[in-house]
Structure formats: structure tokens, C-alpha cells
Length: 123
Image 1: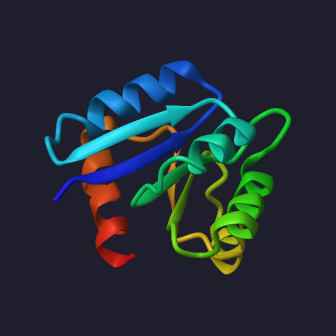
Image 2 (image 1 turned 180 degrees about the vertical axis):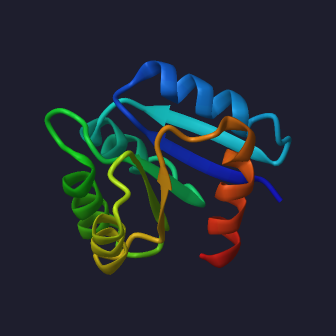
């Protein structure tokens, strides 16, 4: 079964590293975009199995993007934040808002696939 991931992050290097790490798994297909508005456009043409969402981005930050995704597409697509803001209070707030979890930045490319797979299997 192919797992489709949408990774939203304004940092091109992180998008590339995450894509390369995840696509080492032949069952994972990754699409990336650099902003919330770009993600919303892309989501009108695809339904990923999981969205990885950066917290801090210009124009539309992660929480604003998350709210727009929920408003337009409901709760059918699990969203996991990738952020450096991982205090217990920050994580609790994100999960309470409906996120499926948090992956800390900087992420470990060698562990990213296992982390993503765990969130997909629990969705």
C-alpha cells in the first residue's frame, strides 16, 4: 500500500531532506509545498494519507494552515506538526487542537520514516 504524504514547510532544504529520507521507503510518496496557500491549492487535487506541517511559516503559519485545512477538508486527513516548539505545553495545545502529533525539529532523517508510519497506522 502506497502512503501519500504532503509536507508543508517554507524551508527548501528541510523539504528536500524529508522527501529524500521518506522516499527511501518504496511505499511512501511525498509531495511538498512551501506555504499554507500553496498547500490548500494542492489539497484541492490530492488527498494525502498524512500532512506534515511546519509550525512557523510566513503569511500563513502552521496553526492558521491547520485551521484552514480543517475548515475546507474536515478531519479526514491526519496532520502532524514538525516544529522546534516542543515543550509539553506546546505539544498538548497542538494535540488538543486536533493534530495527531508532533515531530520535533530538527528531525532525524533516519527516524522520520518510522515516525511517519506510526502516525499513519494510528490515523
